[in-house]
Image 1 (cartoon, rainbow, N blue to C red):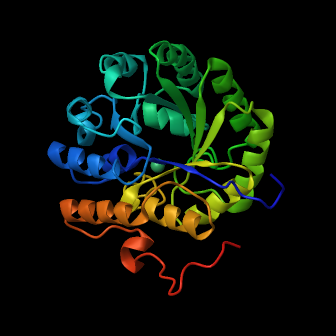
Image 2 (spheres, helix red, strand yellow):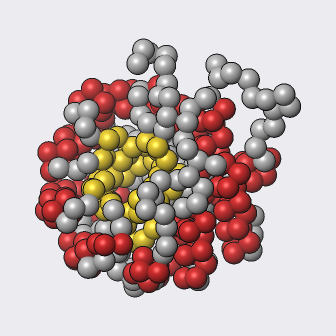
Length: 314
Ligand code: ZN
């Protein structure tokens, strides 16, 4: 890949059923969740995050995760993942290990965010991850480790790239298959993204999948996607309908929308294997379930129409 070439294909993990549903004010009925996930699984998406094993009293929106997992019917080539906050959560998740393929564990890059999120130090979270990753892999599952606030912290401000690199090395050494980088409150800009991912790509083994998780809090999400592509990143996480967000800053919009991401990629000639119209239909369906409009651009404008056919990319 030369400096100006982008990956020819990209993998998208849909995180709306976890990251999205968790951060919407309404509690979505279990049957609706299952129906929406099954609809997403027919769009060509091959990875979907569907449940969380955070304590139900902490996260009542997702307290039906086990029921969702047990009742879901998806094609065999669709890989499901679950979020696990700690060793106890992992132990509960592994009781249902036949129902999913990947486990996501996480820590924040900044001390204050980690404490506010899980009431532990970063060192304690990383130590727990180092204990969990081998157990995930011993169960025959993939393990993704996510670094939240990787591009900036709403409490501490600048997150040094060296800290993100050091955490990445720890996670890679622990045996993670994939490391994800969360722009948890939408602070990243494209130049920072490109520089950080170039350093991360250079510092890690080729076998380690690096994943970008951008929020569109201030409209910079898709610009950050292009910057990550330029740094050789080819796995992205997004949320149908632009569901979700973060309690801080209050009322902020959420993850980049899957339909906006897929449209951008397809317009640039990058394959995803995803049927854009089918994702949009799922987003319209979740709007119906919630009874209010959601924020994605494609929901408002629809896909680009090219009378006479789409021009060659570039
Ligand atoms: Zn997110």
